[in-house]
Image (cartoon, rainbow, N blue to C red; front, side):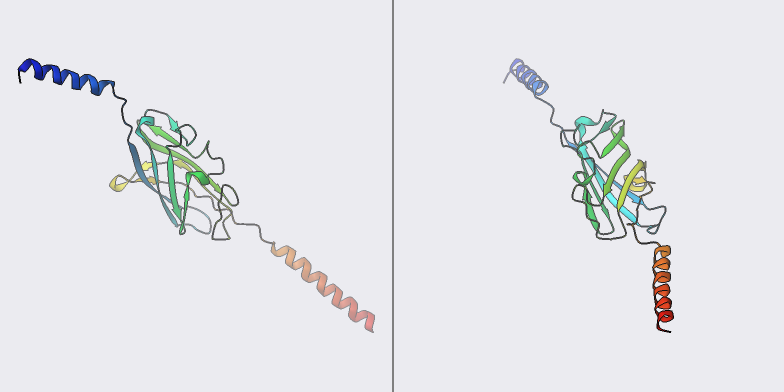
Length: 178
């Protein structure tokens, strides 16, 4: 093979590669979040954010804007939730990006919305909203308050009022017997 033939083959290869569409690759980041307030203080959830690197130049990415390429998985108290469980899917969850790295998250789960059913009956909602910071081992750490809203339970005053009513009925019944 002559040098001229090799040069033509190399040029054809370079031109072919330049004309082919670039193949996007998924990028994934792990994160953890700790409950800072409430009855579950100290409980830790772990998760991942995965999106197509074609969106790395965007300021933010959501499932709808990313053509379905944004994936989020979050495990908390033994249950795993995904981006499709966000109460405003497909516009949310939203991941904020800076230079291709996730730096913020807005992921809200509510009992009864988008298939969410918390196994722990004391939880009515959970929100991952805040800044993601780089942590040890390349994992992102979310210093986020996970909002755990307890479901409504009767107040002690309601029980006290019911007790007084029963006491009043029993006393009035005694007085009518005499």
